[in-house]
Image (cartoon, rainbow, N blue to C red):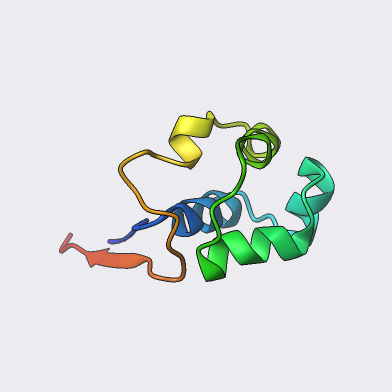
Length: 86
């Protein structure tokens, strides 16, 4: 079994988006946040504003604290892969 563990806010956002099979463009349409901003959060570690966090969380039907956990840094592009034997 392969598990992806987010190590940053960017990872958490990307993982939540991919689990729902939503592209950055589609998330942009659903949230009202530009696809460039979503890219910057996911890949460049740009820290989103509180308003942007709320828009993205609402579009993904999750809480802000679940999408952007306080124990993770903004970061980006560093998902940890955990492989366990079945």
